[in-house]
Length: 410
Image 1 (cartoon, helix red, strand yellow):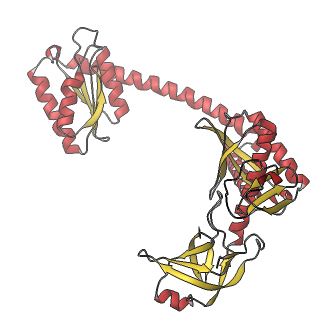
Image 2 (tube, rainbow, N blue to C red):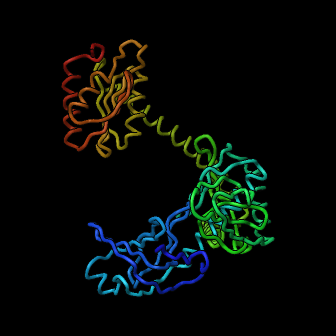
Image 3 (cartoon, helix red, strand yellow):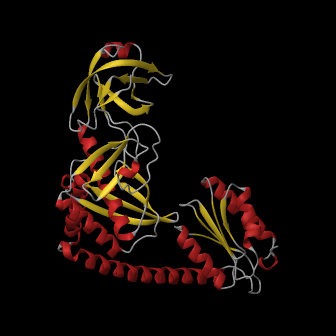
């Protein structure tokens, strides 16, 4: 006997009694419960299943198995007996109707959005995803401009305000021409369920929906992005859209408080701050380069000509700047940063006299001692797993440098 599906006719009912028809168990500790009737919507049609409890035990998943609906719960053996879940027993179950309503709102909004996109832009919906945080549809057109998105959103909101009825029709699958369906149905047997938005939209759909577009209240397209050969449109509807509005309003208030400016001026204040930060960063870069140049001149003056210069910096950025400054003075150098467990090696540009490929010497030494990195003939950087590995690399580099003059490095 097929499970009697009550979720279409009683979408707002929270509790129901049903008889246990059969029970199956698996090795993972889950049991599959089939009832003679159910309010739990199973996974399908792009819509997640309902959640709730069976005799007080949380429902992990709800699946269709032919004409039956299987309720998966984490319980077997004695746990089932204790809860009174045995074949033939009547148990009371509880459905999370808030979750159900949210899913119904998003699903109805998807029908409405897809219909408007097809009518105004000729955009066909390829797929629908209803997630925990957002919903999305994939379209067969390239991403739209923001002005076009706003126009689509305005039309959806108009239909919501006008409160069109959402109707359900049942017809044999061999007779889909009875309705002007937006998309050809994939069902070949059984009864075809057609959801209509009062003359505007007709779709074959097995999901749950609200009774009228006015029930959605709010709708918002959050973003549009390129996806494969078309685009993906993200949206929110109903209470989910209102919750997001509250979240954004709170962010605006917090940003206004943090910047000490009215909410309407937040963007201009942030742009001005960003410009100031860029100016400060440029000045800081110039100061760091000047400090590296000054330090390189001191090292160049005290180190004998033709030898590799070794030094140490407090950050890998400072090490890189110093090594490049020494290269501009015609020096080959190895500069380490113990705090970051990194080291760089640098030489003058390959076209300059006395330049040598540092990666073939210091790069190979770094690899020998556990260093990982990369670079080229004029610059090489490596990171080491620990301080000991870095120190061994530096000692080996000093030995090689002492054995050969910088101008004779292979």
